[in-house]
Image (tube, rainbow, N blue to C red; front, side, top):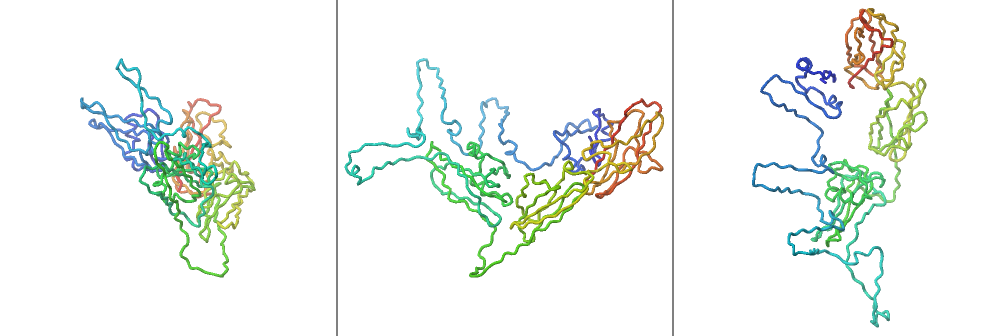
Length: 513
């Protein structure tokens, strides 16, 4: 492929002459929009006639990423090379999240022992750990004792049982949404400082009242199942991560879940002092007493445009409050699919919604209704009526009938009837109309090369008289609902092979303005 206003494809037989004729001298002129059209692995081919040139380099700019994102949940192998014949081993130091050998091995482990001493018949393994037989008891249990202490028997003194223990791992889920009266600016969590080793604290956040949970990693929110405590322990947020989340990623935060684990193998614990929200809300305001207040609410407003089966507009609220909306098509729920309003979002809010023509009644009037609501519940609506039609750059014949649909399906053929070899057909006019809903530029029309036939040539022209045949047509800016006309005819030579059902196809591309 090479780029000339758009990607153009060559066949697989690429030789030196093709590099010289079609090769690009400067690939930096290729726009980002063109690179984004390429999918999968992209191979860059470089040609030079310099016999001393042994390699070429390219500088590629991509979206920022970190090695942590690339290596997440993957096994990493490190290969070292040395020409030191005396080196027999290497040492690699890796910094990870704190863990204990019990976290890796679990509650049971087999130890294998090897010796070349023939007199050795057994081995002993001594393990030092904080352990009590009470650790083996599960659930509630009673401790029963006997005494002949007369004071206890008489009820004058109680018997006391004293024991030390560590709690099991705990998952604590906030049962109700956080009551916020403004936008969250920051979350600040603090712990009780102790000199002893700390246990483990991990946190997760919800933005939909606890239906789903997320953890913040690599500067973005990732979904997580908090019921999987092993996963929560490994991927949940620690205190420093929670405190460092920027304001833009805290919008609509509703709940926080906590995972505590004080290891049963060490005398450690984790004491969380408090979690507080910094909220942009009025404070230190003037204080009034013995007066009544009347809340005045300005209903939200909406500005809508519908063209090319695309609904665009701006939903705004003069009170600078949050807004939400839903869309109905011909009296039926369309967006969101469940019929509810969208989530509240800060105003002004831009609406961009494609209407699937498979849900539109063609050739008759359709009704598109947008209902919108502000933060205080005031509801209003707007209706748009339109005649159902296709969307895109649409081919039409001179009678106004569509030749293809939005997805390229053939609706009507441009029929030339029987063509006698050696003759040129009559000229037919074709119209292309912009039903995209936005202006386009660099319109490029050409016949699909895969339908080429020896001895038969499909010719294009900007005008009918005189007909000036060329291989392709280009046009500039085309506004929505505007159209352009061009002309097609078929020329054959006397040696053209008969084809009882010959077909050709035309394709069009353009750039959005």
